[in-house]
Image 1 (cartoon, helix red, strand yellow):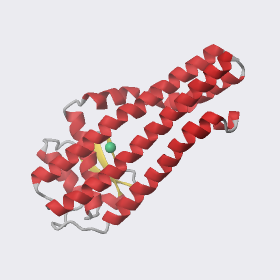
Image 2 (cartoon, helix red, strand yellow; image 1 turned 120 degrees about the vertical axis):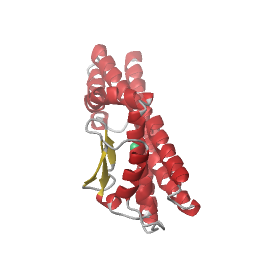
Image 3 (cartoon, rainbow, N blue to C red; image 1 turned 180 degrees about the vertical axis):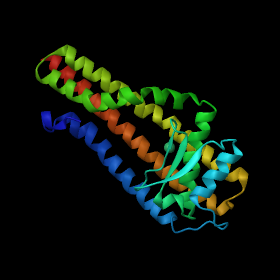
Image 4 (cartoon, helix red, strand yellow; image 1 turned 90 degrees about the vertical axis):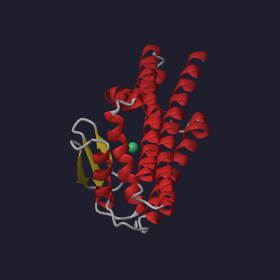
Length: 233
Ligand SMILES: [Zn+2]
């Protein structure tokens, strides 16, 4: 995000770096938690794909397909094509970790069906957030470097929209996970003992979204402080 332009400034050290380290920790934690509970097999022998299909059908979402997708932690729900895509480690796995992830992704499909407002808002922010997070910081940094305030302000505004995207992602993700746990509890496909690891896996995944939001907010605050410092010169 354009750190190279100013080198390492004080705001980078006190704001961005701690958030970045937290994000690294969250990434490590989600992988280690997932790896731990991918060894715990559910008693009924259901796969990630099975549980996704079961939850979707019980919610009347027969038209939402479940597909396998390559990569690690690449699981997602695609609202445009209405497809739940599960990674190789989740799709055919009977581990409680895989079931948790699969249930979480169906949570997004249910959000889509019930027109959950934060999800709709998040979708409208997707295009502008992409632009905002890629070019916004560079515009702001150039504006600060060359003392051109309009460029700085537009850059900061664009990046603010990207930060809004990261923030609205939080209720969307937390809500999908709570729907997942709730549906696994009510359907009774998992035992009481199997639900607890699912909570841990989903909790670790939620922390990565909190970390991403923290990095984005810290980066934004840094840009605002650098810009106001420049104005005071
Ligand atoms: Zn999600």
